[in-house]
Length: 279
Length: 175
Image (cartoon, rainbow over all chains, first blue to last red):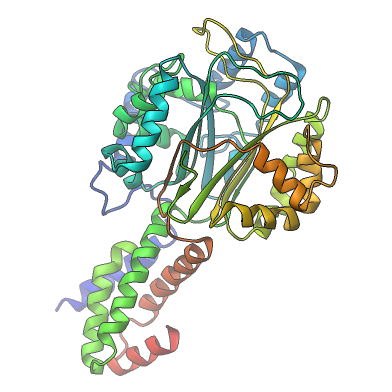
């Protein structure tokens, strides 16, 4: 009697194959990022839309211009850089930050003196001890790879002196979904982690509410001139599902090898029921 | 320092761009989307080239930091050891490397092979904290499981309603 339901489920599974931009993973114990993003987007909207991004807003470019002028470095090159960000996409970022479904974000921030000690300690702990932050980060299944580091000095190539007053925090992420949703999820799910990483940066406004935090990230983001993904049409969820599916399929092959045809078919149906969330 | 997570390596270099070369360099790099040269480096999961015009200064800073040169940031996440990856880069990316790092201060004139590798290593910035969603999966593995996932979904739909013996035969033929 359960067969018709299975057929319906499998048809639905196939239909979902073409809707693979999901940023959530059903096995995640964390609050689903999409849900958080949706809620955050509503809050941001009700708060006056301070976090909007794109040509219609003007906020990020205005912010970048303000930053350049404030630094007294409104050079022709800087202007050229600002002009050639590339058209903003429906994903909420410059087109050159995008390769298929993959998005690049590259952010610099200037670090206060306590960060010289604090951030290396954070990096060490994060790299060597399983922390709630690292676990949650790994469960945010729209992030392929992310990295942080401190730039304390520039390598010497015989160029003019590049002595720095401050270390600068470099952050990059390779993710899928949308820029807005990414920042929303970071702010809502990794609130403490954001404070830990950016709390010693000048101008950091706290992760919540998300509006000012988005403006901060926009001001500090450097657009890529070229971004490459080896599998541009794959989301992190698709890859993690594929890896899990591979393990289950290997087990299925082992278990089903010596079964009768009828038992094989039953085992196959059980497998499909088990893995339908991965397809 | 944490340049690795599982088998994945996170490389980052920052090289000063020669005066007056930034516009041509930017135009060249922006054109790479058409040719996708990093496809030739099959261990590359993700790569980016970013031109940093100046440090981002916040108005609350007591002093501002400024770069005297613009910098080219090269970031790549790839499979396995760094040295062999840079060896491959020096060979397989040689035509592009001359146009990219050849416009940077201190790059050897040939901009390829071992001299380019030494140059990139000299300008490497170690990573503090590196996280990976699938640290033990190579590019090859990722592509394989993605193809397998699609194949299985297609097969499941295609074989609905088959008799048990037909299903088994079809499965053995497919996988």
